[in-house]
Amino acid sequence: MATTAARNRSVGIVAGLVAAVAFATSGPVVKPLLVAGWSPGAAILVRLSVAALLLGAPAAWALRGRWYLLRDEWRTVLGFGVLGVATASTMYYLAVDRLPVAVALLVEYMGPLLLVAWRWARERTAPERATLAGAALATGGLVLVLDLTGSLELDPTGLAFALLSTVGNAAYFALTGRPTALPPISLAGAGMAVGALTVALVAAIGVLPVVAPDVGVELLGAHVHWIVPLLIVATVPTALAYGVSATSVRLLGERLASFLALTEVLVAVLLAWALVGEAPLPTQGAGMVLVVAGIALVRRGTAVPERVSVAVPETSVPVGAD
Image 1 (cartoon, rainbow, N blue to C red):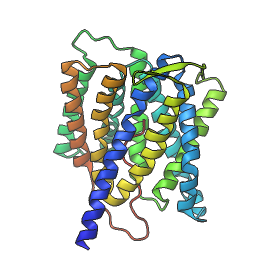
Image 2: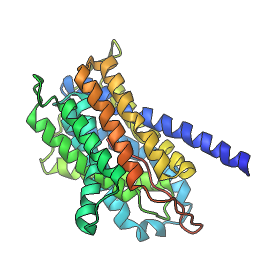
Image 3: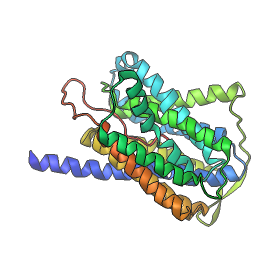
Image 4: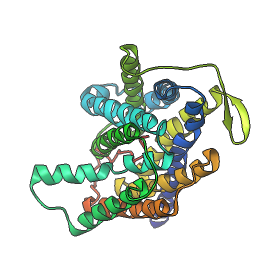
C-alpha cells in the first residue's frame, strides 16, 4: 500500500511538472504569430476549437454513457468554460499582444488574491497570517514586475486586459476547486467546447476582431507557416496540459498540484526570453520571485484539509488557464 501511494505521488508530481511546462509554452509560442499579424481573437478561437476536438474523444470515453453528469453539473461546466477557459485565455492573449509575456502572465496569476478578497468580504473574517503575508509579498512583487517606479512603459490597455484575465483566473480557481462527480478530463473537454463556442459567438457579433492572414512566422530561428504555432498551442498548452494536469490533481489533490503549477510562471519567463527575446529587467526578475513566493503562501494559507470521499472524488484542475 505504501509503495503504491509513493508511486502515485511520484507520477502525480511528474505529471504536474509536465503540465506546468506545457501550459508555459502558450504565450511565448503565440507571440510571434500575433506579431506577424494574427489577431488575439483568431488565435484563441483556433486554439480552443482544435483543443476541444482533441479532448472530445477522451472526455466522452471517461463518461462512458454517464451523460447525465453533464446535465447535473451544467452550471460548473458553463462557468468553467465561459470564465475559466474563454475569459482567462482570451484576455491573456489580448494582454500578450500588447505586453511582455512575463508581465501579462504575472498579472493573471494574481487571481488567488481576488479570491482572498472575495472570501474576506463575503465571510467578514480576516484571512490567516500566511495568506495576508503572501498577499503583501505578491503585491510588492507585482510592483517590481510592472516597474511602476522605473522607466519601463507598459501599454495601459494591455494591463487592463491582463487584469480582466485575473478575473478569469480567479473564477478558474473557484470553479475547479469544487468537488464534482465529473471525471477531470470530461470537465476539461466539456469546458473547452463551451469556451470555444463562447469565443465564436463573441467574434460573430463583432466584439472580438478575427484577423487571420496567411503569413509566415519566425519560431526558434526558423520561418514556419502560421499553422505550426497554432497547432503547438492547441495541443501542448491546451489539450495535453489540461489532460495531464487532471491526472496530477487526481493523484496529488488540489493543494500540492496547485503549488507545482506555479512552475509555469518561471518556465514561461525563460521561454519568452529564449523565443521572443523578452529579457526581464533585474528588478522584474526579483519581482517575479516575490510574486510566485507570495502566491504560494496564499495557496498554503487558504488551503483546506484534503477531503476524503468515495462518492465524489477530488477532480479539480490546477491553475494554467491562459
